[in-house]
Image 1 (cartoon, rainbow, N blue to C red):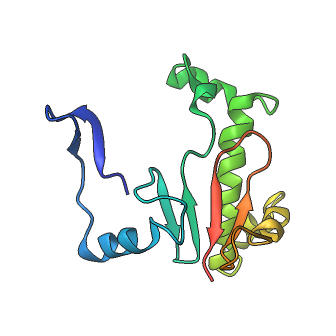
Image 2: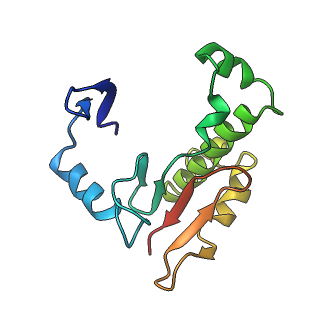
Length: 149
């Protein structure tokens, strides 16, 4: 859910795009904060079926700096491009978490490489003594997906 636009509201913030429902706000208040994540109020924050959480940028946005939408789209057809590696890599980790919670549905997506391999890495490394699990995106990604216990 996107809460604000990129348009300044005149008071130092940004204009409201949408307001969370009471149920959505409860999930945000519960999971977008310690002990589930390292800090409160993370943007972006993604809750996948209350089993996996994603906090922070999926990749360094500097990889997109100076590129137009069309240039970014063009880069996605080049598998050696850092733009492609970052965008597709982060999408693969989100897809793997979704496949875990949907019991491998849709099968054509969840069985396609590299999703099964990524699924095996989710929740394998302890982040803290309390047992919160984390799957780290290898390479230059900043994204962290944590499995709730």
